[in-house]
Amino acid sequence: MLALSRKKGESIIIDNNVEITVLEIKGDQIKLGIKAPKSVPVYRKEIFAQIQEENMNAFAGEAGIEALKKMGK
Image (cartoon, rainbow, N blue to C red; front, side, top):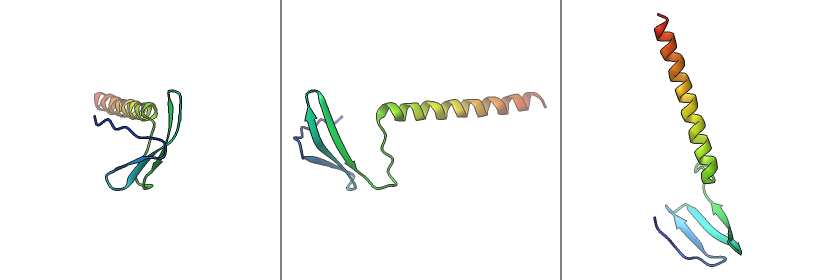
């Protein structure tokens, strides 16, 4: 993991097309602004984890249904 220090108004650039800017600092909370192409999905980590879990459950469900279909043959 790369750890960087930034002040309010300062930015970092990732892969030439994603810019993350520190917008505000209040106590232990930091507000970030993210500029990225529409083709680059940006999620909060907890939302990303939920999406992955739902995808895994859907895949497991599909795999389970296919296994049951094969058992019936």
